[in-house]
Length: 118
Image 1 (cartoon, helix red, strand yellow):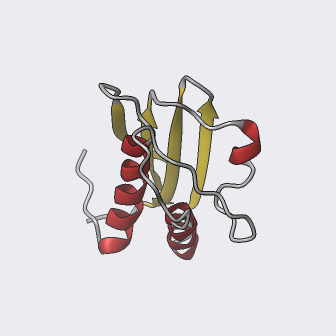
Image 2 (cartoon, rainbow, N blue to C red; image 1 turned 30 degrees about the vertical axis):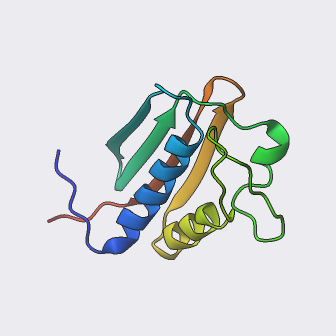
């Protein structure tokens, strides 16, 4: 399976998600990027075995009306805007973005975009 990025939007989304997964993974942790097709969509998954996200913070992700910025496992800082940008880019391209997480187990961020024939 080959995926061709039509523009930088998908690269930005994947890069932002991948950066977050690394930021919140423990030293020696694992980050896996996978792709699959389902119907007319391509689904990208970025999974880590890091610290996970608590239920309270899951509800605050992707929202402009909350200020959520937590330090990474090596005390890296962020603005909390990366996921909001990802959500906007995905939405503008008829896609969806979602997250599944379990504290102390890990997190998977996924997004779907329309599949186009090359």
